[in-house]
Structure formats: structure tokens, C-alpha cells
Amino acid sequence: MTHHQWLLFVPAAMLVAASPGAGNFLALSNGLRGGALAAMIGLVGRVAAFAIMISMVMIGVGAILSTSDIAFSALKWAGVVYLVWLGVRLWRSDTDPIAIETGPAGTPRQFIMREFTVALCNPKAMLLFTAFLPQFLVAGHPMAEQFTMLSAAYITIEVAAASGYAVAGSRVKALNLSRRGTRRVNRITGGLMIAAAGWLATMRRAT
Image (cartoon, rainbow, N blue to C red; front, side):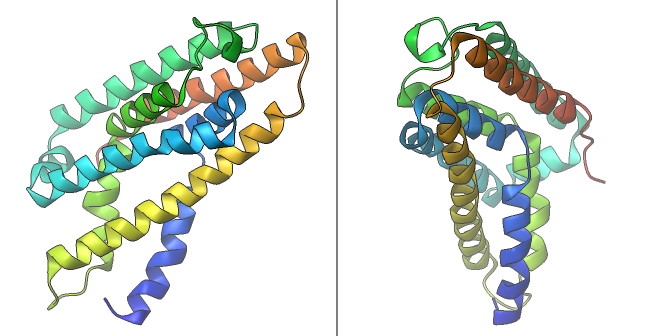
């Protein structure tokens, strides 16, 4: 890639990575419940999901998703259901979920699995690698090498942006809210997850 391509790619990637969405709302929620460190450890799950997606694109499976309405819809609705489930559990939790095993919080391992599932069930993430990144490839240069470099750069930017959401959540956690305040925050974050599910449900496959 040329310097000009990188100058175009980096700000565009930062804008995409920092935009509100299911993944960033989840990082915010994890930061709120487990603190910044646990939420950032959870991002390992998102990176793992992205690595799988990159591999799928490299072998051509991503093209199937980007051209098949059935495959796109199946993945989309799986993501919608999972996000609604998370959002409802958050909404219904009227105490600090860290203190109760049944709450929608948990250990860093659980955060990792949530990040992994949300990322893998989000067709927007797959389309990112099949539609967004290829726009910055330079003809005449090794495609696989360029794609790998772009993917690694985007994942780095994505993790940095999500970490910002995680830290923001941890700042709210540090306020030591009352039970009533915690309930309100749970309902706000739960509502955001459900809103993200609604937004995901409206997604259409790019044509």
C-alpha cells in the first residue's frame, strides 16, 4: 500500500471503529460491570472472531455471505436474538450484576465469550472485511499481504476504540452508585443493547 492509501484508510477506519454499535455497547457494558481491565481482556474474544472472519474471507466464504440473502439473514437474526437476550437480562437486573451469579456480568472469560459471540453473529463485521477493507487494496501488489496488513491495522484501531468505551464504563462503575442508580444504569445499557439489536434487524445486504 502507498502512503496515500494509508492516509485515507486510517481516519476512515477510526471512524468506523469508534461508531456506536453492538460491539462498542457491549464493551461499555462490560466496563461498567467488570471494570476496564476485565472489559479489555474480553476484547480477546472480538479479536478471535475477527481472525476467523479474515480466514473465511481469505478462503472465499465471506463472498458467500455478501451475496447470499439466506446466509446473511441467518447470521443477522442470530445476532439480533443474542443481543435482545443480553439486553433483557441487563434491563431486568435490579442489583449490581457483579454480586450475583445470575446477573448478565461475570468473569473475564464470560466477557471474552460474549465479545466473541456478538462479533461473530454481526454481519456488519463480516461485511467490513468483504466490502470496506478491499477498497484500500492497491492493484498490482500482493493482495493477500495487503489484506492481512489492513486487517491487522483495523483490528488494532478497533481494540483501541473499544477500550475507550470500556474505560468509559469503568468510570461510571467507579461512582459506586446506589441500588436505584445501578438499576437505572442497567436499564440504560440494556436498552442500548436492545436498540443495537433493532438496528441490526434493519440491516440489508449490500448490493
